[in-house]
Picture 1 (cartoon, rainbow, N blue to C red):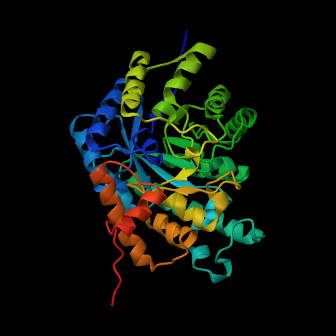
Picture 2 (picture 1 turned 30 degrees about the vertical axis):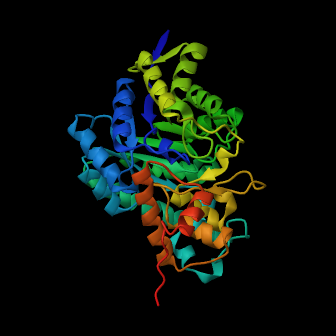
Picture 3 (picture 1 turned 120 degrees about the vertical axis):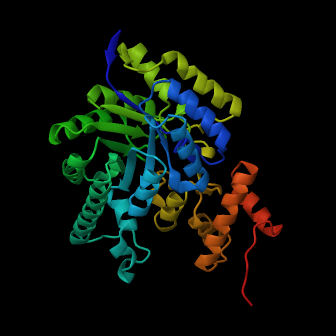
Length: 396
């Protein structure tokens, strides 16, 4: 058996909980963090900005000497970088979309330009506008990488939707960000890659970039995350990001216990530092909790709870869905944003409300999700509104 060096990053407590219908309370997350740490993974990701309970969890785990494993998933903003450091983070994941589709939706200049209101990247956008969007993204990311570096934080940059990014632009980003980062995380956010494309993509990226460690975070929408990840490692990826049980948004992520054992059995590669006997303990605990990933192509795999994803779907269906014939099913919980309620009232009920009402409802549903340790379907939220458990306050 050959021992190989491979950075294994766990996202069970962050991306895993973004699976619609999944809720982990503080005690459960502490237990899972302890079990996951025993497996020997290099990183355990938690996102302090989601809710004060996540800040509490991060701080509590730091106090229990888990800081060497912990990495704070952090939005690209100085406030959130400061928040992560205040929680005790020594390393952070800064994330930003690099596909033209998602950058177009989130670029501040585009959002404020009435000419592009309700348009998407499919609406014959001039090349000069796309170039400007890319330039804005690089400048924005660089400013925050430099800021986090000045604070002494170790940085992993996560390129959201990297698999749909322009190849030359992606290479430019990797080489530009290289001086500030420990890893460049390539995300197949919508799970669109195939094994053949993955291998060629990784080999080409490694050829054109300056010795930057490239790690991969692959979703399972087409049921190919496991084989895609194997091919990425064969091609030269230096790390893997995934979740135990493959849980996560829509059809989930690559399952860490599967990829580690697949590399061992199929390739004869044992990852240095991994306690293979401890992998089963995490899987068994998730089984006891009744938490399983939704199968690809299933109804559950079309559920969306995370606010940033629903916000994008409101403007561009293709932003987070590769199945245009299937209507997204919106869920509500701790990971929801005001956009979930905007979608409910404007797309589903056809009863638009002022933005401040959506914000109020967002705060209420987060509190309910934590109180009842669960998330809620659209039908359940409508019932909560009818029962006035969720309240819309109208001024006289």
